[in-house]
Amino acid sequence: MTALETKIRHAFAKDGALAQCIDGYDERDVQTQMALAVGNAIEQKQQLVVEAQTGTGKTFAYLISAMLSGAKTIVSTGTKALQDQLYYKDLPLVKKALNIPIKTALLKGRANYLCIDRFNKLQQQGASQSEQVEHDLIQIKRWSGHTLSGDLGDVPGVNESSIAFSLVTSSADNCSGRKCEHFDDCYLLRARRLAMDADLIVVNHHLFFADMALKDTGFGELIPSSEMVIFDEAHQIPDIACGYFGESLSTKTIKELAVDISHVYYTELKDTKQLLKAAEIVQRCSDQLRLVFAHNGERGDWGQALKRGDVNGAFEQLLTNLDFMYQVIKISLGRSENLDNCFERLLDVKSRLEKFKTGDKIGFSFWYEASRNHLQLNISPLSIADKFSEHTKSLDSAWLFTSATLKVDDKFDHFTAQLGIKDPQTLSLDSPFDYQLQSLFCVPRYFAEPASPNYLDQLAQTTQVLIEASNGGVLILVTSFSTLNRLQAKLAGQIDQTLLVQGDDSKQALLNQFVQDGDAVLLATSSFWEGVDIRGDALRCVIIDKLPFASPDDPLLKARLDDKKKQGVEGFDAVQVPQAVIALKQGAGRLIRDVNDRGALVLCDTRMITRPYGRIFLQSLPDMKRTRDLKQVIDYLEQL
Image (cartoon, rainbow, N blue to C red; front, side, top):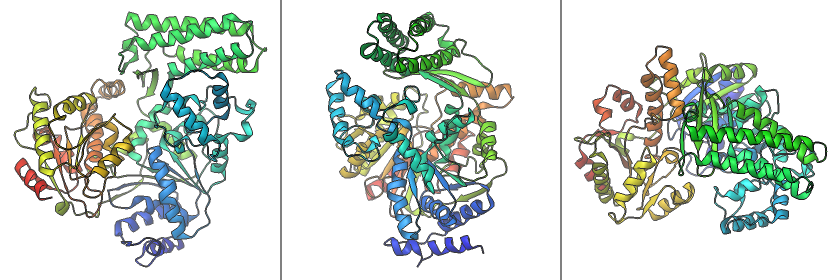
């Protein structure tokens, strides 16, 4: 037994470090097993893939092993919310239990930190904003007087999606770098310096892969080298990574450039009226390109979109006027440092935009996403396996990939193939929960198939019956916003319980309301399928509308399916089924979060029983008591 193994076993023992620090500590064999595997991976510099089901206690398992090993460690999580929970809640508890002097740091992406320069310029301009934005900016100003971190997530009373945040943060495009007069006080740089000096750094997947892509081009190092890299919620990383090894350009970036050029005109070069004219035209053209797509947003294949006359016309118009802007700025180069900086950004924008003139390149998907205010153009690689494999080999580190949902058809192959991970150590840990005792799973008999015209009516009717039986405490997870809106219309006014709907408030605010009410009904899609941890009686039933296959219209999915077809592989089995299995496991995992939880999971999609692929889905779910009889579920919920 190595010294590290001895320390790990002692930390998790009944009378060990954790037991002395946590009231009611319960020793879990699976947790110790995972911690020992992580410790071994660190010592042997191995790649370790662990599916640790709900209740395993994987966070403490990897944190304790990493900290006891003394290895410089990067922990990457799925979201900023999980990042904060890990850093502000879990880490302090582990540090207290182990009593080890360890330096820790929290590092987020650029868009999370107040930019002093942009904030000051905004106040000087005094540009009139909407009432809500003005209110949010006042809150930011009050908070800015006493913040030490500059982390905008700490601003009280401002919604996380507020437009105000984009006005007071910098981007890689508009940051002045060392030329900025606030360089020495920059919150982002301060956070990076702390990270460089830390023993354990907490980041998120987006930042990790943004940094990896930067290193790939020979620039920057936001995240220092380490001896151990841990990916929690690792099932998310193949899709996130793809976004960073392609190219993207948003009309938001182009408009920000035009706004900054206008600012140069008003403050430094008022004798150059063409400068203002060029900036205003480019802003207008950016808006016109966005407006040729649906008002409420859409996404699609960029190559196909370019064949439309209105899209092609607006795109060419933008290119022409960026050329005009280029000629105008060129005349004034050397007169203003800020304008020279804008010129560099313009060259980068023009270069990136040129790549979207064709909309076609082997091994890549060209696609667009129109949100309410902006249009983003993307070029994504169909696979990052080779790139990621090269990166892991180039670092002399141990690697841990862990999540509650990594296996498909009882194998890790789908996950490891996406990342090019060859011959890793693997470990599969079952949940300590007694699912047979704690839960009931039902695919109701005689249910219409999702494609049937009667399906939505039957779904609404069944949902109402289950809400009545459980007296609320129901989470309804649907696979599209279209179903969400139609189901909301059918349930509104038909149930006695409070109906909370995704989009009415922030995710965290809705979850807080749901728990406080105790008998509410929460209707949600996409982002609520994971990262939702509701323990106790507030959640008694989870209803899922159908198997969560990705939309066949998704441009990236279509490109991947075409690619598989060219390889002679059936894309549905190789791509769509594994993706949907992992998504279903995430959704089902919302129900039982604690040893005392009880509840029913109802999936209103008979394809799980009638189609050959249904076996893979069924096998992936926890070992719940099963029934096809909806009456049994109703009785079960009434007893709860």
